[in-house]
Amino acid sequence: MTDLAKLIKAYDVRGVVPDEFNEDLARQIGAAFARLVQAEAVIVVRDMRPSSVSLSAAFAEGVTAQGLDVIDAGLGSTDLLYFAAGHLNLPGAVFTASHNPAQYNGIKMCLAGAAPVGQDTGLRDIRRMLEEGIPAGPVRRGEVTHRDLLAEYSVYLRSLVDLSRIRPLKVVADAGNGMGGHMVPAVLGDAILPALPLSIVPMYFELDGTFPNHEANPLDPANLVDLQKAVVEHGADIGLAFDGDADRCFVIDQNGDPVPPSTIVALIATRELAKAPGAAVVYNVITSKAVPEIVTEHGGIPVRERVGHSFMKATMAKHDAVFGGEHSGHYYFRDFWRADTGMLAAMHVLAALGGQDRSLSELTGGYSRYHASGEINSEVADVAATIDAVTAHFAGKGISVDRIDGVTVELPGGWFNLRPSNTEPVLRLNVEAATTGEMIRIRDEVLSLVRGTSSSA
Image (cartoon, rainbow, N blue to C red; front, side):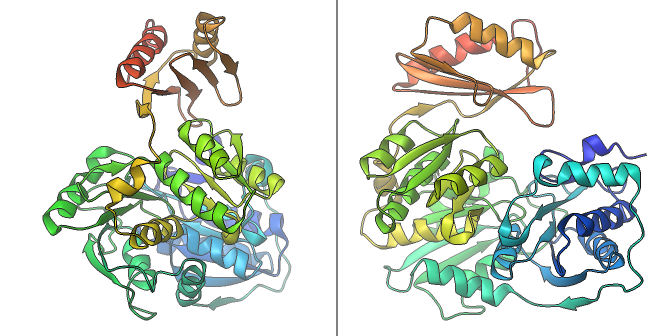
């Protein structure tokens, strides 16, 4: 029997197919989602994983059995779902396991207007309905209609960022055999709309949910190696890496070096603040200290939030923020129903690069001010006790200590955040400092406390 607590995670549904997640469960979740949203129709999108076809069809059966109609949008990225939910003002679901390996699949759901569905906004209710049993629907079953939204999505994104007058750029794009291979030609190429001054060098655009080249997880440096080499070999101006469901984008400069997502957050924030002076910009607790500094310097209001899209989107709504960004390559836009979209983020970077004559490394240099450790994971026996011990150790040593998300300690020469994973007994450490030496010193002091009586990963 499937462990629903393991399958239904903080922000989505995700598990191994068919052992943890199968058509019967997808059908039940579809019925539960229909009862939750009580809308006239539900949008369904799917990625390129082999199991997505049957799982999404089963979900649609569950929805229609409850009397709701289904708009089947076919193949698409997660941000295509968000566009559809905002554009049509309907709830929906996309079948994807994002960057997870081939044996996984899952569902990301949203309400009308692309409002997030998390534990407190629907997932807990869906789990309860699955456990208690879902009542039969009305006699009248809903109908399934097919609607291709790719062209409307592409036109909308191009209306937000004008790339038609930038200087010519050579762009290497690595889709990792994920949905980027479907979306990039539509938005940045000429598959649907007039050509832009972009020469696209495609990498792994073939839709293949078995991921024959590398995992579609750009957060792992090993999965960027091919793109880094290709950017240099082709003499490209920029490299773009998309994750499996193409809602995240990572950037490589002309030298083949990764541009930290925090740097991209700061760059896009300045562009959005130029359109909305004085607006709020939301950033998470792990984002570089440079982000709030740069937002303030450009007349914006920086707002700090814990990690996670549901928290980011809620805080953006509360402050009517124009933009939000996370260290993990998630970028949220008020003009995109406060949802995250890797494609729109990529377009902003291309516009910034193509609108002036400097290289990408020169352009982004001014947005990168500190030295970061990157995320370091440690397996621990007791997550809460370990965080308490680290907090006690640094009491009185730091300039400030807060527990918004795990513990964040600001020290005279830098800061660190230690927070628990949402899904496993792991602590994630991020350190940033003014110098590499100070970053290493803080990193090693924290790790000695975390790993003193635990194994590491």
